[in-house]
Image (cartoon, rainbow, N blue to C red; front, side, top):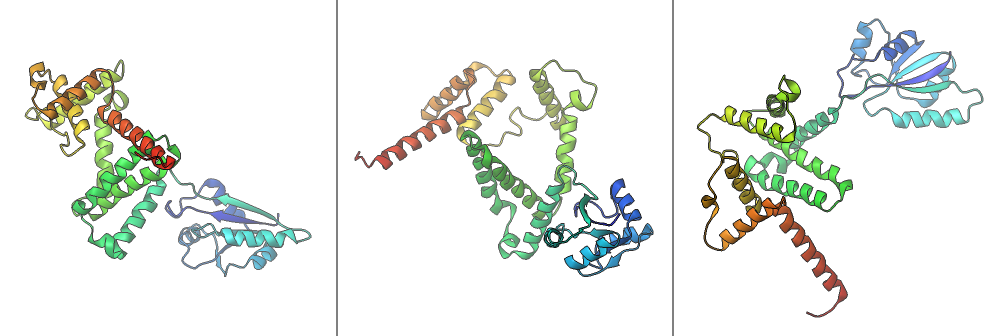
Length: 312
């Protein structure tokens, strides 16, 4: 049957890895056309005995060819959407138009777009003067800033903006991996995958757990075994984090280790804040989140006063 099929393939899938319907369509087509001699699929199609003609992208010529038989057009990396629209415009004014169809020859796997981010990051590192000068140390403030923006988005309930903010954090991760000399982003991914599998034996192994509390206990035990018996109960606690969250983290670690209550006592203004953190934790509240919420309310009150034009 006469017709035109636009065969689209993903640049994130290795050439030649086509779906079975795509191979059947290619083998049964009267003509297979491509717009460039370096189309990545050409070597694999020709190796499979499929003849491919290289011709300039011409909507009118494609319509004429499709009127006389079945034609497959190998779309470029962008899907040749502009060419498809041009063909559609011609068919609207054609008395007996051939059928037109879009067929996906490959589909992206989940996470495939991360490859695009890695490619862009590599290009920036190579070609942008600013990106070439960056180091782990110079990027550290941006990583903190982007992480705080994610928290701010979540606490503000602006979930529509969360995707963008998470993208900014992901970019920081890929950038740090790109400038590293001793490891790559694949090494980063490999390490976290191995850690997650290792610390979830109830999912990837034969361990049985009753609830989330037991999961946490197993996690801590596995982590302690990984770090050795000499590791401190505070090993892995970043001391550079905000003071309230730091105090809460240290208190949680000390409680789990069975530290006596007398060690929690201290003198001075800082001690008063430390005690407030302990009280909020006992009430099941996050000290950092509580203070951030109070700061938000203060901001809103000042904004309202500012907008009212009232004098203090």
